[in-house]
Length: 209
Image (cartoon, rainbow, N blue to C red; front, side):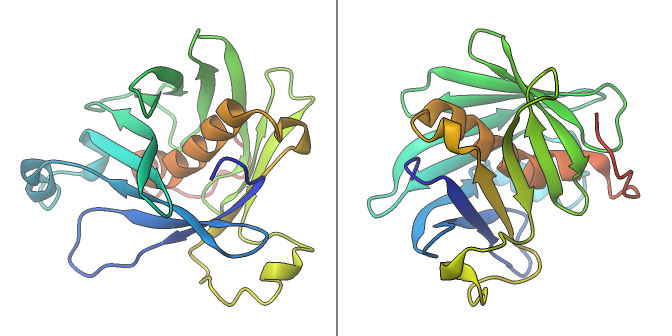
């Protein structure tokens, strides 16, 4: 999965389900290369019908096809005003963390590596799923997320995807850096599964610093 530089993320639409799940496709070919699914307890599933989802903990498992081997997990505990999301590899080792901004309604967050070193921040319109991951100084774009990937012949007609799905394109300079791609893919999933929930559907603020 992490050999890809372009990812297409396709959400499963389920009726009467409190759990989110996704197919992860090669953004150039459309081939399914992995999946992402929340793995939460039955109690948490039940509580989601009566307690706001954004207040509750969650774990997301990302697995690779064809054998469904674990690639990484995202974990977030109970949320009050500011949350921290951990990314851990298949062996349970910390890869990085995402830290939300205090009292933000835009869902903005920062990405740090396993040693706590600043890796990226989000810039753009997360509500419209058109945003960039930038280095701390803002000079280098590490990845870009949008509803479409222009110029990709394999997906030109977008036969597989609805308006609710989106694409991550990783900077080619990171092609041989699987940990960096893991953090960017995890951060993209976190926007939809975690931070959009925390934003509670506020208006699009347009720019996230």
